[in-house]
Image 1 (cartoon, rainbow, N blue to C red):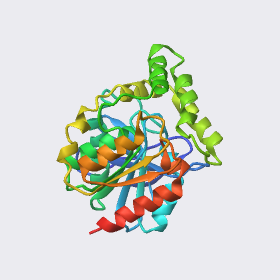
Image 2: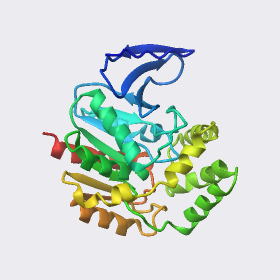
Image 3: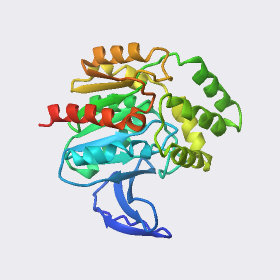
Length: 302
């Protein structure tokens, strides 16, 4: 067995978990201002995550690419109040996770999620994905059905689709030169077509700061270029309960409602359309999103 301890300036170790092999967890707590977070070491890098702990059924919330785990900041306390243990994570190269990853595929992120569920060791989890990570949830559900209790896809890309012309232009600009982070951040507010959260300016500033950090945008580009084949080929193989949540005004899809219908049909899933919501319903419509998630979880807690 190995004992892992993280030492960083202004960071205090909160607890250490003993593991015997493979990935392992390091727990840390910021001494000033920040919420406590932990590191999962897996596949040569570190995945940052927050764990509310508790005895309730486990829910793992995975953010979209180009965003922070705090995109779930409004939904997390609602799920905790409903009795769930909630874990939110940062994707490879995002937030407080490490940079320098060589693999940014759907399968790679799926391995991170499964390693996290396994090491937390609190039973199978409800796996929730938004945008890119909806495909990650699909992949993980087929790869290790013993670790995944059910999946919820929020505004998710699970197959190869044409994107709307504006997003397509933004993606081309991002890959064309050093102005990529600025191009992405100029598009970010457009994913919130309706009323924005009161703290949106602060959240946007934090996301912008993250995207400017060394190595962050390179990871973003790699994720954006990742093939959807890992999830697309597994859609029909999912044999567990699923939920599809889609904002009716999601600008990232050529036809958001048609895509939600397709996903619900192929997954035999319940479909929830949130009127006026964009690409991040968990942030622009947290009450409705949390209600949909909790109702889904309650139906399938064994």
